[in-house]
Image 1 (cartoon, rainbow, N blue to C red):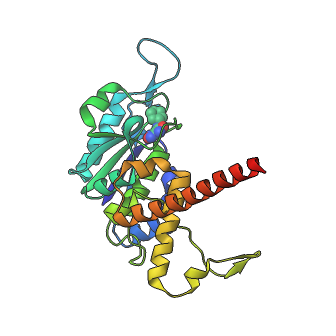
Image 2: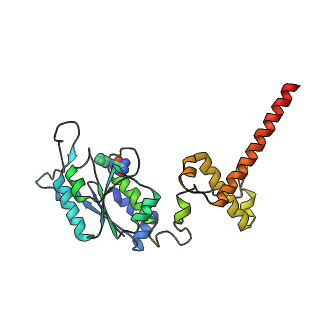
Image 3: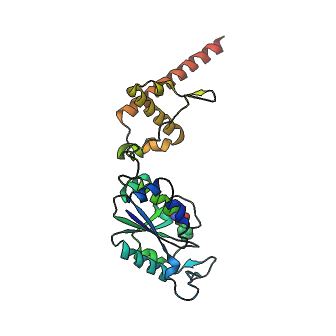
Length: 260
Ligand code: 4GY
């Protein structure tokens, strides 16, 4: 997949492009990250890209002509690309959306600055608005990097064959289980015995329990959002039974205390 980013700060993508798994994916020609300097399409000696908002008010708005020029140049190189604007007003980004976008041929990512871009660009040139979260960045560049990073993980061959992008059903439903590596004891804390046992059945069971308990404690909302498997329900019910046992026991004891 080719990512073409329209930005006033293309240098921001240099380190992103040149390190880690993204660098590797570029080297393997699974992806490319190309930038287009919007200023290059601004007219006049000063190549101005922003102007004061009609109707007044603070801040500046990105002028439509340079963005339209940059978009047309991008479309020349990637004619079948989906054109995405990064904005807090967009559809919430998620792993599910990343997986869908990974099926596109190419992506054009438009990064705004200042107070935003002229509405006529949003309406007539853009296929999709995406938000990476409910906060306002100083520009869309970080959001574009987030999207490139998460989408790339779903492109075949980008991750090592060992760590596959988690399969559709499991990945977005539960949090990851706890992870441990050597040493087997660190500052007095041992690795859970079961993980050293070599018993793959017990290890899978432990990992599922670990995922469930972490999701229950940190993100209860996820347990209501999707259907649980019968195995997951069985684990929840077993906890329920154990908790009920403790409650019953405590209530009996407290009555006994009062009688004394
Ligand atoms: N949040 N998700 C986001 C953002 C910067 C001023 C409009 C976000 O995606 N993009 O905060 N972008 C602003 C900067 C113009 C976009």
